[in-house]
Amino acid sequence: MSLVRSLFLAVFLLLTASLSAHPEWKEAYCIGVIDDEYVFDFKVKFDAPSYYVGKHPKEATIKELDALMYEPGRLAAAAAQAPNDFLRGTRVYADGVAVPLELVGFPTAAEVQTLSKQQGEADRYPVIMTARLRTRIPRETGIIEVVYPEALGSVITNLRRGMDSQVLMTVAPGEKGLFKIGEAHFTLSGFLREGFDHVVPDGWDHGLFMLAMMLAAASIGEALKRSLIFTMGHAITLTLVVTGLLPPVSNWIEPIIAATIALGGYLAYRQKPAQTAFFLVPLAFGLIHGLGFAAAAADKLQDIGTADLAKLLLGFNVGVEAAQAAIILATAGVLWVLAQARLETTTLRRVLGLLIAIAGTAIMAFRIWSLTKGA
Image (tube, rainbow, N blue to C red; front, side, top):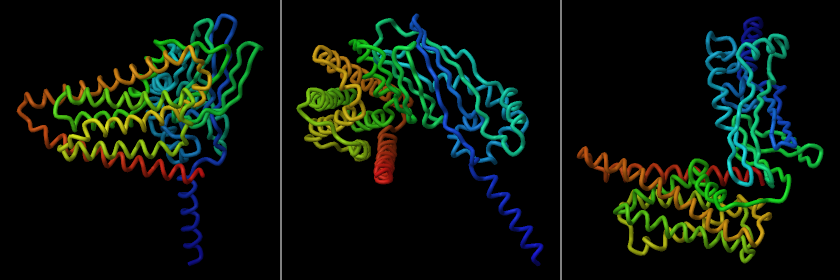
């Protein structure tokens, strides 16, 4: 009987080990150099197998990694898709404007498998490989920002410009690592682009809110008017924070923003907006969202001088409004096509509104949990 228990215990421990993350996981790190010709060459070292399964090395289990490495064709298929995904997930901004990236080198399936075997059976993970990227930075650039694929987790980053300046930082998933190499130069076009990107593609939660606003409106014109009122509110609080008339808020603004998404979805579900809601709701929500952006961009706002304030307030808010209008028009186009097919859209509006309300509530709960956990 003791032999049976021993065998059972051994099998249990083996299964438990296969489902746990490898204890020797390592964070990704990047070394980047900007030369005298303003060529930005940077190398990102990361655990390739965990990236291929789309997880942080700490979260990828040995069972998942073994399935990737040993099931026929899986590693090759993942390695074929990974370079494009890595390039899409990595972004570099010069003074707020995205610059095109070139992927110079990326690990192949054969290289990953070979290194894993060389490390031996006991130490087959992590398999640290290198992706090399390059871009050319416009001359007189003041601030470089780098975003990495979220599956890498936090990336320890060491950036330098020749021997003049160097910065060592940890860039969290989805955030921008900021490297100041000279005097910041802000352009109207840069703020326009950043305002648009703030909604599409970066602000998926903002997009949900605009979708709810469109679904609750009686017409395209009404939705566009509400969008404009929302942007006015957004601009008011952003202006107050930038000019120092209102102190920056804490990260607790994020669950409040999620609550506005939930309420916007509920209004779309009701399909009976009150007359007072036409003006007050988008204005109030805009004021809240403006505080959220100011909190998220607090570091960058410190570098903005008086001469650049007008560019920021005009460019960013016009960019936001353009992205919102794009979401409204795209949604209206889909609803028009369904109406032409003689399909009832009221039920669809209500269902989508309810789903947005549920999603907003879930996002709010998650953000509250994240803040209390980190407190």
